[in-house]
Image (cartoon, rainbow, N blue to C red; front, side, top):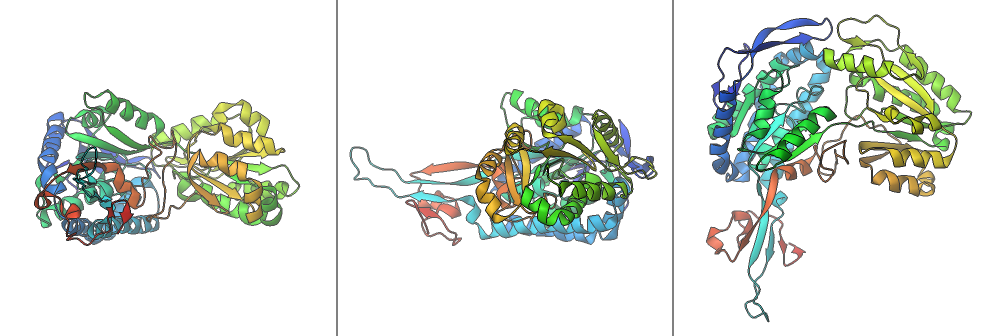
Length: 519
């Protein structure tokens, strides 16, 4: 497939003209063709108008029809073959093997949501029977379920060109809910975005869906993305990126005449607490596992552990030596963009702490992995040490007292994850630590590492601000669909006019709550 470098506006393409940009190869820093053309405000408005026009028809499709669409998208993405993997690798500096796995996750997510909406229980249908004889006021017939919220704007993530981008979790869950989607492509991997966007658009055509169900917008700067959030046809936003970027979109969305929700995943250091028993018994394996978690993907995962709290005991000495050696032996790797590289170097240089780093040759946007070390008192007295540095680095915080451990947990901002290494008995003895962490994170991990998010019905990928903008939701797993829905109640409606999910005869055969009992 030849890349055109223009936005996908419904079933059409954007015009050639206006501001242009290219992708870059992070391994060399050199531009990669072709040129991509930023959408105009008029093209953006057309995409939003098409989405608004498609809203009712798409939202009222039976679940089985939307499921067919999601499965066709997955089939089309797989049909791109190695072309997709090679382009993603070129635009990110990451190996094609990484994208074979990420493509698998992307297609799994699409099919997972297809299964969910085809089965149908996800709408949380509830029926309360009437009682006309009730005194002093007759009881009405009340029924409710989840309905799609409307057109959704999705902003692609820099670090996941497939699984958190054009057809990633935000798009898959919004389409599954019955919401048209307009995607704002990330400037770092526009070719990958166009390939996947074409797969989605083709699937919409092939399934006979309304034209405005999907659009893909290319842009330079912030004007188009901000205009997208301000457009009155947009009813919710999905975003994965920096705290500054997410906060900016939240503020724009809140300032609209009709404020809307922004579901933003932003900043997390994912602390790991290594208890003394674990350090004594398994310090070697913990050092090896931590090294993998910090450096995989050049540390560019939202779940990378950025703070590791360690006990001040004898076994910590060989742990630090082993981990430091592994960091020194890890080759430098390019980061995704020059901006990410520059930020990594600036924030790292600002930490006046003991440091071990790789000393290999750096090319393009490359950086060397590193590990910093400090004590609990210093950490607690310097708020900046708790800030995220996106890339292959972490901070070891040595604690000598249990109260210090608890204070570190108390002072943490909201996080996606927190991990505890120890024994089952430690969990009982440290119930107060767990109680604190439950208020700080979306996922608690025992004797494991935060990188690697299992996609499934039970997963929670979210957390209190600034990890996300709304800790009540998850960006991964089947719960993600709930972000793009709202409850609608039907009171005293005749059976024939109710949605299929709420009719007396339950034609879809779904599980419902009837008079407070699941049936």
